[in-house]
Image (cartoon, rainbow, N blue to C red; front, side, top):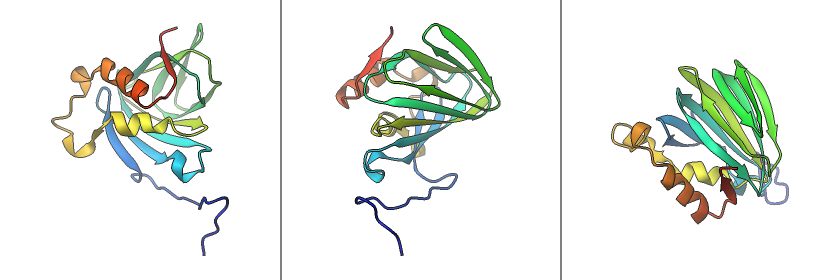
Length: 162
């Protein structure tokens, strides 16, 4: 028997489960929980990132963001402060704080959690289906203009740059 609370049901996703997309430099980004599944409370995305994966400096206006780094080396710049998370760590970013990240190790694994949820749509809708692995325009062919266009089209309230 599954309990429902306010129209929501418990969800369990294991490693390898969720909606996976190719992203950026060739990373795999997987939506683990979507806002629709949590009554809008939270969205959770997992990155299996490759070296050079990055997000240019940007600011969220609609949600707070939490990074949970599981492994690898990720350079996080928050405001004027730059920190290297090597191995594991957590970063909380309240909305309105400019930030960026860069993967400097061969690979890195991390979660991006947003509250309220909804931002996870950016990854699932902008990324490319995994089945296109060899032909998807990722890596050097990835278009930063495309990501900015999608964030605007989805109404995500991102501000690029400072």
